Image (cartoon, rainbow, N blue to C red; front, side, top):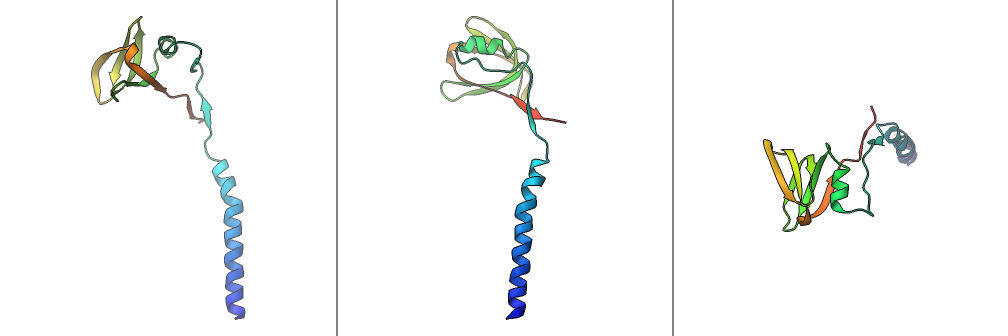
Length: 112
């Protein structure tokens, strides 16, 4: 019986030490930092937000569930020019801005 209690106490102490140390180990890892110059402007149009992402890699979701990912090369009144498409390095795309329902862009990266 004493051996069983001693084993339970050791296990309890080990589990307590793991719970105390784990958050510190996790907290000491790399931290995400915001990328400079990247922001959404919710008071502006989809076109204006795309202009703010010139040169950035974005994913646009279109009506009908199509998804296109590439680097924003140019933004016109009705069309978006994406270059270097994912899975198609030598292809560009023209996307109708009124068909875009969502824009995804990377806003953070890990500090080095």
